[in-house]
Image (tube, rainbow, N blue to C red; front, side, top):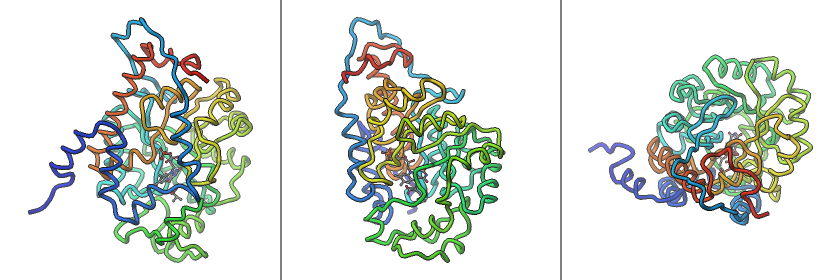
Amino acid sequence: MTLTFPTEEQLKALQQAVNLSEIEALGRARLDQNALDYYASGANDGHTHRANREDFSRIRLRPRMLMDVSDVQTGTSVLGLPLDFPVGIAPSAFHGLAHPDAELATARAAAGLGSVMTLSTFSNTPIEDVARAAAGRLWFQLYLYKDREVSAGLVRRAEAAGARALVLTVDTPFVGRREANERHRFNLPPHLQVPNAGSREALAGLETQSGSQLVRHFQGLVDPSLSWRDLDWLKSLSGLPIILKGILTAEDAELAVQHGCHVWVSNHGGRQLDTAVSTIAALPEIADAVAGRMEIYLDGGVSRGTDVLKALALGARAVFLGRPALWGLAAGGEDGVRRVLELLKGEVRLALALSGKQSLGQVGRDLLKM
Ligand SMILES: Cc1cc2nc3c(=O)[nH]c(=O)nc-3n(C[C@H](O)[C@H](O)[C@H](O)COP(=O)(O)O)c2cc1C
Ligand SMILES: CC(C)CC(=O)C(=O)O
């Protein structure tokens, strides 16, 4: 008998899951050590990874009563793209470690729920195929290559395929030290390709001191000399809006705005500089600096509808999910990612109503007890 994936049993477990933590448990149970280490790990001691979650839960809400919340709207837009609710998918490498449909499954789920998917440079599926599955709901994440022509080619491909924005990741001149990957010598299984990031042969030839294939791979290709001076060149390549992902300070937010870029508050899910500030703690100074001139997004530790409202109250236009989407993908492919998004959408709606708001436009700092 051939088993279809997800099985009936997995689909039932997904439907019975009542929150994102339960889907995480389902997803974790399906992954081998190599993939689990890669998805789960933060850098070093994991302080920032944990702080992303903990700092959300420390903020208390000030709900208003008697506000007629019989009709609650969760819709918004990002860079003109309408979203059914203010949640998108953050870029993460190697969805093929979680499910054979890889990025196609994630993209279909995001499109089906009126969300937006950000595709990693290090995907296991070519940009063009994911763009078709995402039905116009796609942003492309870029790591700047030492060979600028490779990056330029990726930007042109992303634009031609219909991606609506470029997300330049600025917090990864070098890969943070995820110790579990080093210890267990993370390896990309041979059946998985990285079609936007160079051939496997090119990757295999790269040598450094590190035990992790990921680090060898990345450091051979990606340029740590990336600086503010490169942004004009990047802008000249396409007409797409540029979002800088990995901003954590008011100073860098101001520079991003001066360079005509939108701001994505992120510490890479705590995978880069350990003890860096949590994203929700970084957001207020960034929102003050940007002062409405550009859009602001946030990722890191979002797992509840109330987290989404807190980020919006402090100035984010939308938030993005990293690991939660990967757990969903591992738990049940497209169905799993869909369930993650559905659960969170329901939580956002209920949290809005219980806060006494009819729409996201009414969410401001007065919702928070700071
Ligand atoms: C397994 C994994 C792979 C990732 N790969 C990328 C990547 O290729 N490019 C990138 O900009 N960020 C990458 N990130 C960071 C995410 O985009 C995001 O910032 C982070 O996961 C958000 O935190 P969360 O996992 O708590 O939601 C990755 C994160 C994880 C967990
Ligand atoms: C290093 C990359 C290949 C992927 C990434 O950003 C990550 O693993 O956090």
